[in-house]
Image (tube, rainbow, N blue to C red; front, side):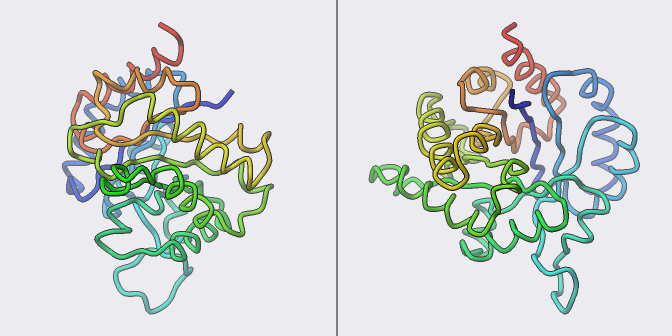
Length: 256
């Protein structure tokens, strides 16, 4: 059984005081939800404070990004060594990093390998833009993104991976991907590509999330799909209703 994940990517929102106040408000209710792993990915400035606040509980922290070198003259970056002090996970290859900050497939791959080297679980994001989607190129594009991101990952490391399918046209738009399409891309494209790379047993162990306009009202429909192992949530994770979203996900997993 793959334990589902509900992860909240806060992006560039909430200063430290806001972050600690919000987590203090929802922590007890969120920790009371079982059956799913819960992850918060705040801005880097809040990682220390939230690590202290969440110590002893079951809510995990993820960095939103990292560089692939351990240290050096890389102004503005944080290293896997630094991330590992506070986090169990790190988001890699988010579409905003790829499009706004011009991260290439090669850079994404180097970050994945660095994360694994430092015992971090990479949450590797893949997904197509609207033009590719409308051209019918989603399957080939996403499969190639997976292959590029995971080049050089050893089979023994692969079960530690988490992937997230985030169609760019659905992120922050309020227009979520159709659940059947999400199941197709995650199950028939991403998981089949993982099978090609690492074999069926390993591919079946890797968790694959859906992200893109996930809300309390629609999360259950995604979680009910056989190959969707959770959600990478953006804007909805910045509101108290994130607890409701996580609970709805857990209920769907439990068949309630």
